[in-house]
Image 1 (cartoon, rainbow, N blue to C red):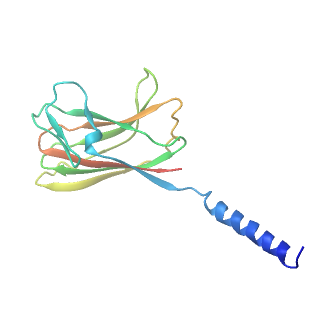
Image 2 (cartoon, helix red, strand yellow; image 1 turned 135 degrees about the horizontal axis):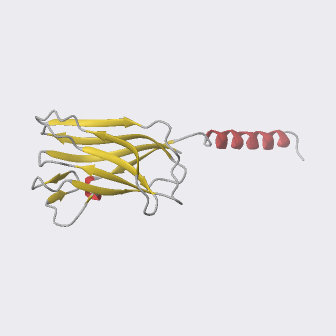
Length: 162
């Protein structure tokens, strides 16, 4: 063996270990849910769900669902909703966990301000002490209350660590 080769090999292994160890730390991920992912609670709803906004047209089409697919073991840290509020009523958004036919459990919720007058806003709810995502036992979804034609949902962002 040539002189210096063992030191070079040790250096390469040490660098590989250090680089891979830095990748082991906790990371932050984001799941963006567009308005077109939301489906009405029941048939007969009169609503528009384009790529940029969800809004109802008749004042009665008020509850919507959207699936949530997060990685196994992820921990939700924030729920954020971007909306347009032209009403004194509020948009309310719930992140829900459910198993089989059991009752649902709310992981987080957020709502609009009800201030009206072209109020574009973000509603942010930080989530503390959330259980890790367990896709083997639970299903996850968003449940949205959109009570009037004067409210629009633009997007939802779920922040999580893994």
